[in-house]
Length: 295
Image 1 (cartoon, one colour):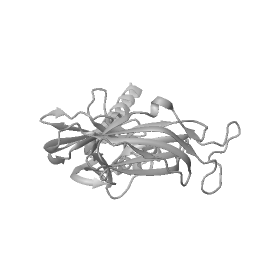
Image 2 (image 1 turned 180 degrees about the vertical axis):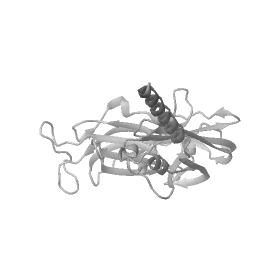
Image 3 (image 1 turned 45 degrees about the vertical axis):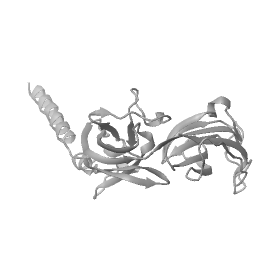
Image 4 (image 1 turned 135 degrees about the vertical axis):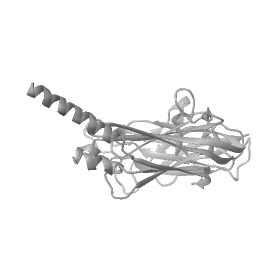
């Protein structure tokens, strides 16, 4: 009987600890800065303010935050209806086609700190399937996850009636015929070192609009990125005069090595005109890309 009572006390203590932990206020504030321009792209900046220290205060173990996993998941709505993602923005779209921005905390971001931490997340207006002009939208973020003791947390914050000015929308189309990387990097070193494969890089190409990917692919163990139809007719929305970035990297398990970084400015480009990019410089031995802008 005594053992039974001890077990019940231990069981209820665990429940009490879980209730205490899940009621902690970790997600402190949600801020939205509308109508800003970042890296040549029009959009809004979402600021998440959080602090995970209360978890460690209750459970002072090294692993309680080291083994934690948390994510900010942000959605957008207008007149209580979810905003759909625009053409080409599958990377920020859920299974029903609504815009969902997910931002996972890194290992360093889950460390306990005395002061609140902030994360800034830029969202290009081009990703939102809205007509040009003024809109009043609601921004909602769910912060959720588990600590190293498998205790779950969830907080929802909402920023209502955010006033945005959606620019005129253009359609950008890019064809990548090929991108050939030099045998050695600028330091004269081989890209990869391995016993059982070549020293050639794993060339990855990522097309970005304000940090949001609209196309991504890579090839393994070759200096030549050429994937045929899979890199042709990449069509996505941009706001008028947005900058399109093409990031080329050697894809590695831990850290990707930058090969080239190209900026395609659209403010000086004519609509319905095909442009060619074939410059050989830096780490690029040869390449051929074409692109055009349409209404």
